Length: 159
Image 1: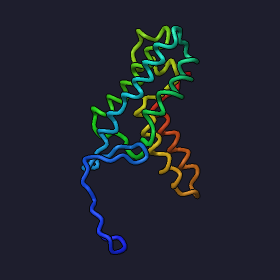
Image 2: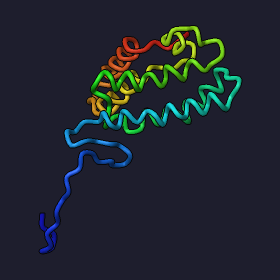
Image 3: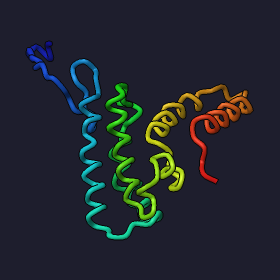
Image 4: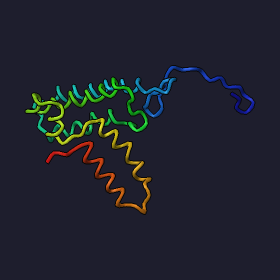
């Protein structure tokens, strides 16, 4: 490649990090998805720091310290492989066990009790928002129908 009569040689790399998102030479984000260890470490820090964890304390800590690491730029790198989706979801699965009284419940029951959606649902919803914003403005009733349909069929909030 030439730049102002100077020849610049680009080196070949197996992966590159741009704005904290790691992508490999095959345009694969598995290496980035495997960085769930930071979020897992934060779950461990919360567990060791707090002896009593009620719903409110947990939600504040989880939403501010753990979940941002799992969702940062997820619209760019949303995991394609099942193993990556499972690894990411396992962090939330582990974290929800910290709340007193929820340890013996299933993952889905814990999410319902805490009012949390799955991380998979949040990624799907984040992917849909830009598409709905581009939906024709002259048909707002149809846009509301679509949003209502998505909410009913993907995640039901606890009563």
